[in-house]
Length: 443
Ligand code: ARG
Picture 1 (cartoon, helix red, strand yellow):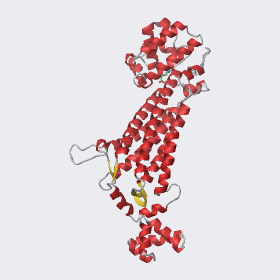
Picture 2 (picture 1 turned 135 degrees about the vertical axis):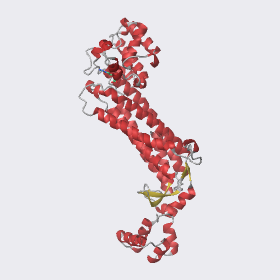
Picture 3 (picture 1 turned 90 degrees about the vertical axis):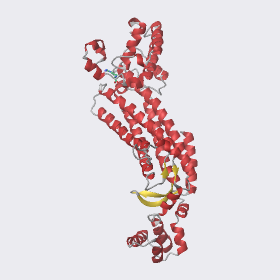
Picture 4 (picture 1 turned 120 degrees about the horizontal axis):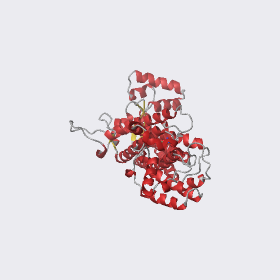
């Protein structure tokens, strides 16, 4: 459907019209569109392109319009028709001068997305603060670290949550970077090659809070990489939230019993009265699949689109909003769950010793004290493990005094000796908390 054909719209088949309509999804960009209309008309008045009296009347009408009053193919046409109804065509007819729906919609999406990126940045900031609180309270809470979901080496809840902190901090940085690229104005690109009217693109960009204009009018109307980039960031966050959820779901199972999830964020069974199910976290895990779907859909729609505008682009826009909705809902749940989850310290401590989690330290001891190469120490211990020896029997075979053995296999002692940057010793964890707090202040 070309802009030129809008006057012929009445001739379209009703099913075809319904099929191309985006009005219900356009609810997301309604407020942005009113702002874009006002900024555009103000600029046209300033440039003496529209008569001042008409401009003022149009702006007055625009301020009165509610989304629920609208009907039409899309929000842009519907708003213009509504202004028509309110002030008449002689006046309203000026507002779409030197503009196309192509640059209009691209501008509206960028404005709403900007708003959502800031919301998400705020949510992430809160989330990071909550993670740091968990770290602060658990610098000494022992737990088994896992690889392949098998007991590996002892660590602490503090260290484990610092790992989350790092990854969510990178997510926040990515959102802020993405904001800068989304924050350029395509308005004035018009259909694809700008206009012969003497418009002032810098003025509309400034009025709409953009940090500059897009330099090429074809790029202005054709590109949606800013949306793909945003949804890619959302996908990354959702994947991290899904991993965190998965872990908490496992940790709250009867077999693990590492954590007690807050009652307010679990639900029960309609048949088994004893059940406490982690439904909210399961849905966060599932919604990460939906956001990945949105990312894939956007990529697939963009692939093979010739320049400049094609109506395919309309199909992509709701995927941005559904991923925003899923992400914000999930972040909200994760934020609460993380604050209220209680750790079963006794169980965690006991478990941190299980499965010979001091195996690597035992090998390290042989290297340090008996001066044998690590690979030989490793195979010595692995042979003893294969023979089914317990730790005391192993110590005997390896000539390690009983008292020394106690030291080597005590998870707390192991951690205290780990003073390398990034390690789980409580001392390093405390330094990292300070560093994290400083970083949060800077964002
Ligand atoms: N509703 C359309 C969209 O979201 C607006 C642009 C329509 N432009 C056109 N030339 N048909 O993309």
